[in-house]
Amino acid sequence: MTATLETPTTTPVAAGTTPAPVVRRRRGRRAVNLVLPVAVFAALLGVWYAITYLVLDPGRRFLMPAPHTLVTDALLDPTITDKVWPALGRSIVVTFTGLAIAIVIGMLWAIAMSQSKAVESSLYPYAVALQCIPILALVPLIGFWFGFGFPSRVIVCVMIALFPIVSNTLFGIQSVDRGHHELFTLHKAGRTTRLLKLQLPAALPAIFAGFRISAGLSVVGAIVGDLFFKQGEPGLGILLSNFSSRLQGAPLFFTIVVTAALGFAVFFLFGWLSKLVVGSWYDQSRDR
Amino acid sequence: MSAPAPTAPPAAPPTATRVLEFADVARQFPDGTVALEGVDLTIDRGEFVTVVGPSGCGKSTLLRIASGLDAASAGSARVDAERIGYVFQDATLLPWRSVKKNVELLAELHGMSRTATNQAALDAIELVGLRGHEKKLPRALSGGMKMRASLARSLTLDPDLFLFDEPFGALDEITRERLNDELIRLFVAKGFGALFITHSVSEAVYMSTRVLVMSGRPGRIVESFDVPFGSDRTPELRFTPEFAKLAGEVSHALREGHS
Ligand SMILES: Nc1ncnc2c1ncn2[C@@H]1O[C@H](COP(=O)(O)OP(=O)(O)O)[C@@H](O)[C@H]1O
Ligand SMILES: [Mg+2]
Picture 1 (cartoon, rainbow over the protein chains, first blue to last red):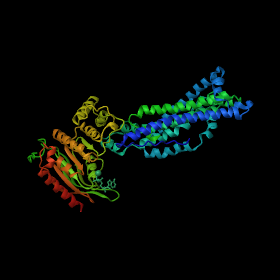
Picture 2: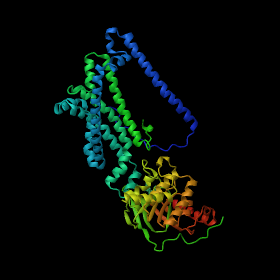
Picture 3: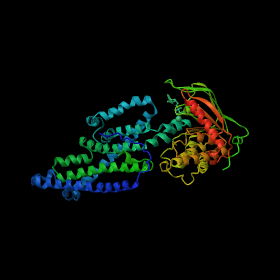
Picture 4: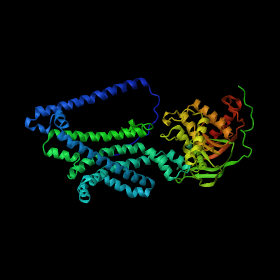
């Protein structure tokens, strides 16, 4: 949980630049963007195979099963996939339920703070506390209070995912251009009108940056909740724990890959949504 | 190149109504800065009053008080206008709204009906020559087009008093002069009262029925010039001896106030 505040910068209109070198550089960069990652990936696979077959003796290969065995011994093995796919489904449900609740609470919290300095100074410390207290320390307490099932898992997700949404929404609302505010003041816009027609639309790029961070954190929350509350219907976390305790190397690695894929999927889903909603008027390439 | 004959100022409507009346207006900021002092100023509908002065002399403060965004700390600042148009140097368009939607904004804020808003926006877009660009987002517009959109946005309210704070200051000269002509055309057609701030003496003389020269610290109006040219102003006016003479006098007053 490091970068939680992405700063959307306003984009000055690009002055007339000389096009030719820019295009050439960009085309070159695109090739590099493709070739280098593929090369690195291939190298990593090579190292992986080397470790499996050269470093580990045959009896210990379950520690680092060869990449292709993830396919042969897990993806194509129904006894494994019959566990993994339903677990993935349950983890997705926990992730998105937690994220949805975090989005609603976080945005309402930030909007309330944006409307009054008094509310902000009385509620902001709790947002900071949420960020500073290691949520993991509270997980046992959550289980203690709410049981070891679905609700507790969702609560962990919400607590982990909340802060970036609160801070980004508040930051976005507070960064509204002063000239725009004066325009609304001049024409006697009420609080709600100002919020709906000015502050929230202007804050959308920052809000989506928050969603993207929180979506990743929510996946973490779902797995962590699973690892702690080893009861009820198993999600990916429980499978990870089970496969590792049973020394099932290939299924364990396969489940890790599936979990990682879930993380990537939610991150890119929100990147795509953001592009869809604000991409036409807000240049996102600037805050990567 | 024929010199336009000096005629009466652009036709004021028969019932010349006062839209702005400042008497001995002062503005002192909490930090002690006296931005304005002893400002007397009246504007009727059909009058185009331009203020020139060095930067920091209090021009924006004058407009902010006229608009109600700021208040005089002494004197009386009366504004008698149902609706005020205020055009800033920065077009202040909302980047997520299309041209049409931006132009509709103020009408929306003033609670005009959907159909009235739509019609007012279409008319205003037509007036400023942005037909065909309705669907574009601000980032796709040139500086001049942004300013047209900003102008159109205020026009939807059909204001009695129009305030302009160096609206064309950031534009290139050709665009600026073209917009000068279009604004004169709008002014003649609509007959609003205007208070226009600029750094350019030439723009001031070209646009106005009256030019005020301000000096700074504290901001005061040091001189007033009635502009004798009629409402049929064309770019050639800028090259006439009468124009040069008046511009020279305004420049001179500006320098005097400066020292
Ligand atoms: N809110 C404020 N607080 C203190 N001083 C201000 C404030 N606004 C403007 N001033 C000062 O008042 C003077 C006039 O400002 P302004 O009206 O913006 O000048 P102009 O538009 O002619 O450049 C300047 O010296 C400026 O620094
Ligand atoms: Mg100014």
